[in-house]
Length: 164
Image 1 (tube, helix red, strand yellow):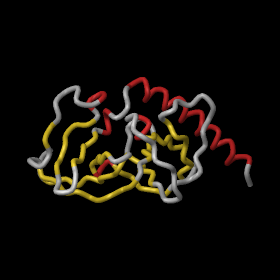
Image 2 (tube, rainbow, N blue to C red):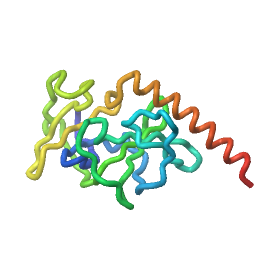
Image 3 (cartoon, one colour):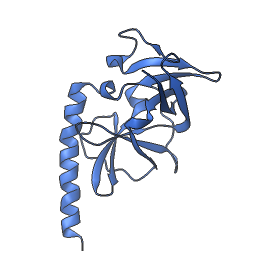
């Protein structure tokens, strides 16, 4: 990291993670998600975001942490993914953290699955793991996600054509 960057910090089953603010599109409260059959367990379902099928990944399931119950305002963080839309289901959004290049300590290779946690920051309150959006999903998961997203988007498009 160079200069100062802002990170959105969120809680996943008591673990705190952060993503660069520039990777975020929006945060939406819990919504009714569609869940096609045979969808992998780490995917919570699809969010219909203004006509776009956005796959929602449960980070607690993905990181094999205890899952918190879904609530009315459970946040869904929609991020800028390269290949297709993507969102993360988290327990709580806690703060925006402004960091300089020297605040974050890079993590050793193989510290986390697929090296998705690139660095860690220790604040007065907690340790925050900075996630790499490019490495949160492995290639096979990305391909699976794209296939399901394509099918769900087609279903949404067909629904919009048939509804007045």
